[in-house]
Image (cartoon, rainbow, N blue to C red; front, side, top):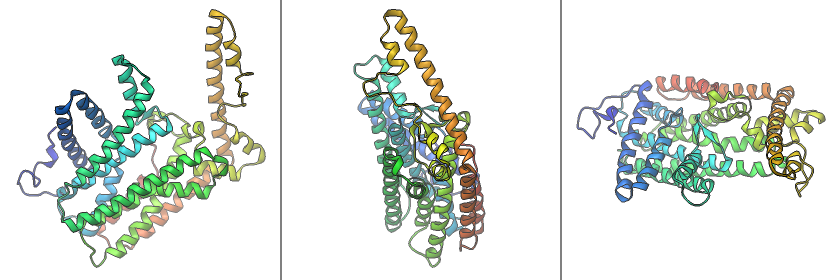
Amino acid sequence: MANDILEGTRRFGVPHQPIPADGLVNAVEGTLAEFLAGQIAALDAVDPALGMFARTTRDLVLAGGKRLRPTFAYWGWRGMLGSREPVDSVLPALAALELMHTFALVHDDVMDGSATRRGRPTAHRLFATQHEIAGRSGDSEQFGSTSAILVGDLCLVWADQLLAQTAVTTATLFGVRACYDRMRVEAVAGQYLDVLGETQPDEWSLERALVVARHKTASYTVQRPLQFGLALAGPMRRMAPAINEAYDSYGIAVGEAFQLRDDLLGVYGDPKVTGKPASDDLRTRKPTALLMLAHRLATPAQRAELAQTPAGAVIPADGSGGPLSTAMKLPGSARDVAVREAATDEALSMEARIARQAEVIAETGAVSQVEAMIRQRVDQAVSAIQNAPIHHDARAALIDLAMTATHRPA
């Protein structure tokens, strides 16, 4: 697909034009679309099935999203260079962050078993459905998960390829790459801690949940993209150390606040707005900062309710004692009816328990305290950037982003 926004860039030999801030997302989208069109054509030439695989991957990359990472990187770059420098030379680097983000989201959805993302089926569900419709042999769920893992891997490779197209000096690209590599390592480290926490929720704490937030979210959403943008501005200049320090403080504070908002949305968000099922974090017992804080503030009775799994009372290991297992013992059609009724009752009971846990979390005061933690971090971020030696338009944009990224409905 042709990229109209890139008309007038170095590829066409026409004079450069700076892209206004409100056109940045369109410019990133256009860069991605043009790059992905070439990748699809190359894989299509090998085998039509690969072309289909690549098109599904493209659709996942371009399926909306806030494009926060390239936005923060853009303002990190503008903070050093000002508004007159044309952006076309660094668009591949900015767009590469979205390919890395897709890698992280797709793998995260497989790990969490999530059915939807941004209101659409997740990658593993898309491929499982394709498997079912085609009538292929084998397990469709397994095929879906395997294919989604490959989608994430492919996006990470594509991110490297697109980053390499950035029109900067070799020395600058080395600096950018060092920041990019650190970002990726921290994202993987944070994700592992997140997965580990779900396996031992009773051993987790508020402090450890914030460590996860800092590495899984703050690092690759705000902190490192800002420093990535600063690296794109070229080798160290006189004010670069002071700017880097300001970006570091701002990025950690806004990134943690962003994750804390996600914690609240994971329990109280509207699925029609978030694009994710309601209360997913409670279903998986994810030890978020919100839940850890609720446990800390809870009375013994409240703590007991929060400790209960969404499935309620534990059924013996042999399967006896539960309504569903009792229904399974009935003969013929009576069994089918009883199983459907038992499954429906169990689902309704689970929803009621999850809703009650959400109420208990609010009753502990954890929600209001998390809101206060968000406000505190936004204040810290604004203070860090207020006196930083960056261009005034970047400062204004970053102050605005500190608010919009952390006070959002999705």
